[in-house]
Amino acid sequence: MEKPLHVVTGAFGYSGRWVAHHLLQQDVRVRTLTNAVGRDDPFEGCVEVHGLDFTDMDRLVASLKGAEVLYNTYWVRYNKSGKRFAHATAVENTRILFEAARRAGVKRVVHFSVANPTKAPHWTYFEGKVEVERLLKTSGLSYAILRPTVLFGGERNVLINNIAWMLRRFPVFGVFGFGGYPIQPVHVEDVAEVAVAQGKLEENTVVDVAGPETFRYKNYIRLMVKALGLRRLILPMPPLAAWLFGRCLGVLLQDDVITRAEIKGLRQGLMASSSPPVGTRLFSEWIAEHGASFGERYQNDLKERVYADPKEPTDAGDV
Image 1 (cartoon, rainbow, N blue to C red):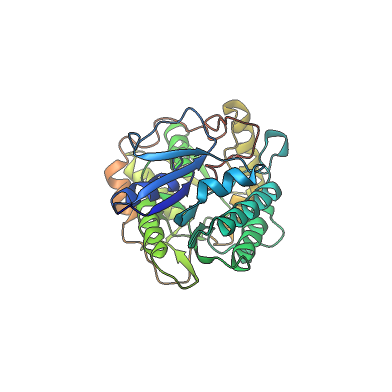
Image 2 (cartoon, helix red, strand yellow; image 1 turned 120 degrees about the vertical axis):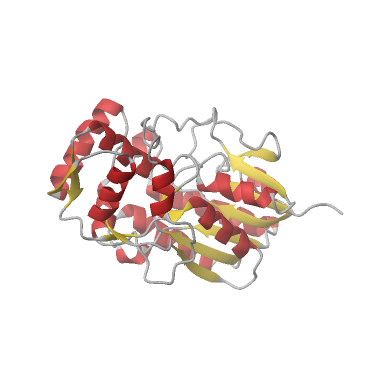
């Protein structure tokens, strides 16, 4: 009997990689849709690789034909149309992907959104997330929408890794405002396990995916400082000044260190959930175990995104 087929967008990325890992343990066929090039294959050829071209509906449908579940991690973190990153384009591409899934007869879609998307009006990142959720809900497909907070663990935890990198290199670290807003990190494997479990269900669901610990942001930074074995001065900073510092640092690094939407999301407490936590892995234990070596190398998110064709990227937006 042929194994059931599950498809993951961006399995060489961050959250998609862990979804694929957990699916392979379930004894199913796993296929990824991607146009990223130059990334390592952690699956040793066990995951089928198909190209992702949003301009070719027939090819998309063929790549999804026979799939039991589509796990969609596709999104873009940035809004840079000149560099082929644009939230409005990502929305349209996702609409095309959902239509291809419907035509291919995909039985269920597990879609990765973001925590509290409706609480951030007029920010294109969150507006796009809300619109994509609406598109899925009205598509006629069986769906699960996952709303994770901020991810940690695994590989490519870009935001947290780069915070640790800065803590290692600067004696003073500025938090946005007074740093009293909540953050509730969730381990990427917890998110992957929830995704795979939701793929087995039939009813339509929207699930907040958050970890078991909630910190004030300034205490979260202090915990990281302690785990790294450092002594650092943690100072409140006007959000605009912090963003401008990030912009200047980004010029030197040729990257976007932090976006204004991410700062606003943090300060409004959007990286925490009011729902009961579904994650079980503790950030405090994880950072204590990995702190000695964590953040030694800056992860340049923009430079690492290399694509085979001039199409929108597929492995972005895991926060």
